[in-house]
Length: 209
Length: 290
Image (cartoon, rainbow over all chains, first blue to last red; front, side, top):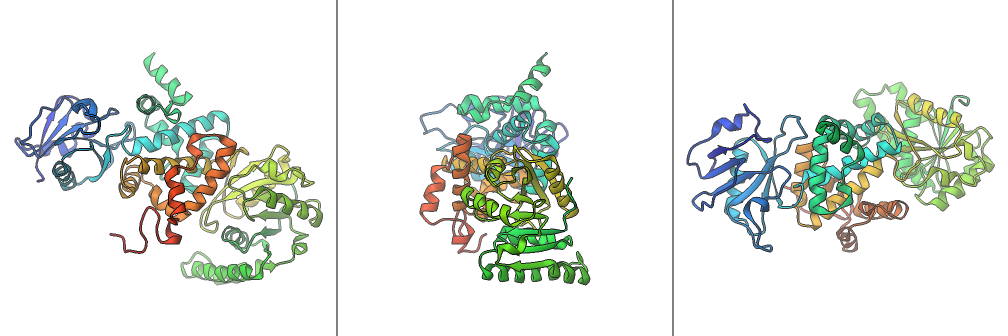
């Protein structure tokens, strides 16, 4: 089950124009990939995959007190702001999602050359849920004078073995974008760690003005 | 700046961190007095130094002459009085404020007036460690990363009373020892642990909340962010009991909810799932991993 059909109704963060994946669409394939738009019920498909931004899958499918789930799954290819997308696809399931649909989606993405991880339908999926509080903390530390941006970035690279520093990464990924993601996570989780740091608020306001 | 450092003393040189710091110092050609309370730990560190430097020669990172010279630089002792003439004393003793303060008070009596004291603490305040030692202006924070002989970073921080010359001397020594110093304020966890400890707790809470399995979280972080090691793998390496201790050091002084030990962490420690050292943590090390 490696074929897929793409229906694109809007821009895609996972597959920007020219991405090789876009050219592999096979009409009528068992796995349907929706880039924008809303899913229709179609049990004849092995899996229907909706590209997610900051929202949860339940926004598209509706929820039933923990009993939600079908052949409709969410996904996003991880991307730091406007950096090129990585090879990682986060596949989003619900409590009663079809195991066959998950397997079909995994096989399809892996056959297309992606690494796949599966996570519950929780705010931020895996990466944004875990890194956004860290970016906010680093930005606050910068304001509080804990260390310079260069010192913090060097500590990340040389002390933690990260490929780049937190400040340089979040700035490169666009602080206004960080604001959008953090705000969405804060709204859904209610946790203070997701409140956008001051520098992200400033960047967002400047972009709006 | 004070006079250049020629002799370094490492207190706690029988431990992992202290032994690593001694290797850094000796490799750079400083006479390095290795102090610990028990001879066995010092003997073990000496053996490790011999192996480490020999491997460095094999890998072409060091000449045979440099290896011989570095080993000659290491001077073990169990007598604290032997470090009296050190220019720089780096303490890497047990992470306890009382233990470190007691040591600095003793050192203040033993060491010459110009000697600088550096603390390798990862969680405690430099100002508090220095308080009452008798030479608060000559105490500085120098936090090495584990394993010190491989990791180049040193977080250097001033206590409130640290003199500029003390800081400059510690900075210059770090550079001379081919390390990369970064300046941080004297705040809990400095940079590295202030970022890492809450992040690791977030990961544990995500596992507990059923977000994803540890293997998928590690895979996502490694592929998506390019980290060398996944956070669950790292926690297993650090030791989950160590993570509890770090939380217990951070949370009371920061009151940051992210720094508090997650319930799952405490349950895993209570169950004896401490990570690699106990054979089981987020992963099972008693079985070959697929």
